[in-house]
Length: 260
Image 1 (cartoon, rainbow, N blue to C red):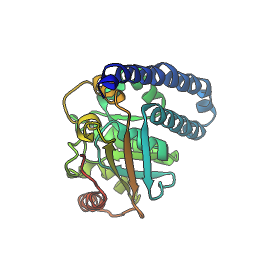
Image 2: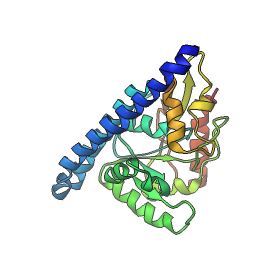
Image 3: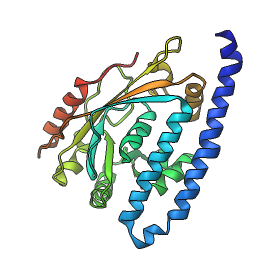
Image 4: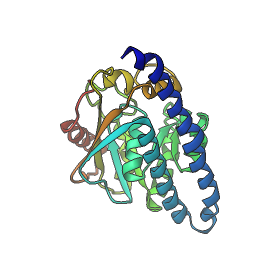
């Protein structure tokens, strides 16, 4: 264990970081640029290509980072509106890998180095959560994405939780599905680490106020983790966003496992 901590862990950490951010991500970005002209012919076709690229990136990331993924249930067909609980930035990775969905992400992600530029090119929708006015703009973008055949993933807790329980869902994030008369699919995410490693709450959960890359490098220094993704059997519909938000919360909570 001492040898692993002194020699293996740093090597593993920086090798993974190099492979993901200096090999995999630039390669996917170059391919994205090469197929960009597709958007001039058909935005719908370009979005389909984007889905395959983002899934390819997610598969590569998971393989390099040692993230083993167990899936229960069937991913929803496109187009769809899906809500899930939120424990880590890895949540986006899992949902992208299994569904090819895009997300409504917090506005500061747009300005992250490398990942921000890539996210913009992949039609990720950014929202200023401090501005209520921004909701109308975002809802318009969501409606357009659904019309183009995209699947949309939303973390309805509106923030990363500590992983002790599923926090209340924000009904405002359910409103676009109500406006578009779409039943809402749901998924539950949970994580566990290998024996001998710190618990998932320490190395997977990202609820503490620490920089993204600092947290990621620490995660990369360990052998990996196991992520479990439960898809609900049937979507839930309704025309009252508050009632629908509570029903979805209860459905997600049924299969939720608190972080270790």
